[in-house]
Image 1 (cartoon, rainbow, N blue to C red):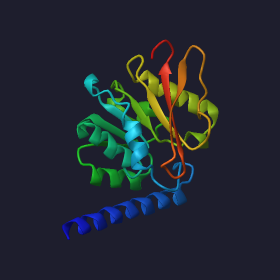
Image 2 (tube, rainbow, N blue to C red):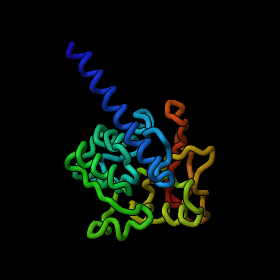
Image 3 (cartoon, rainbow, N blue to C red):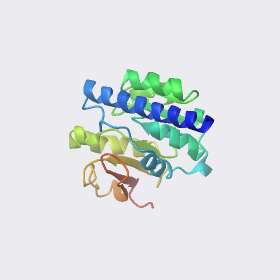
Image 4 (cartoon, rainbow, N blue to C red):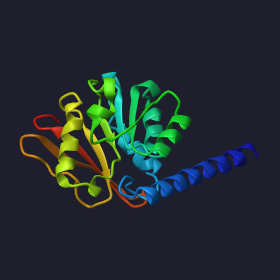
Length: 202
């Protein structure tokens, strides 16, 4: 009986997350990349790039309903070592409520110097991004990736989810490399994951 109750609660939570995500997409379609939250399979793949041995905090961009945030926590990162930047005030409230201790910051991921405030000088282990880059001009996408890489140790990656067939940001000679990380069919829509690193590091 308890097991059935737990399943119903889990399904109700999932439905609530999807409804909230869809509402966010309806309100601000350019700020939300998909009408359905990232799948748990995709979230685990994104969180898998974290190097727990670095002892550095993790930067998450566009947590939405917190599916990837949950995967980062399950990976073993402490709540206080996650800095999650979210544009939507509704998603900010949701993530703060459901993931106490996580540093949830409302602001623009394209202007992290301002958004992070006194934490702008932090060095992060990696950056995990669900920001819908295809909705923005290429010049802003390139600046975004470069800004994230500037906040990571040499060689550490930015991972980006996208729903197009190609990397949303092309490789830039002398600046950073692009590597296809995974194609996750168990996501609606199927998701592509890309890694960006500074040139000369693997």
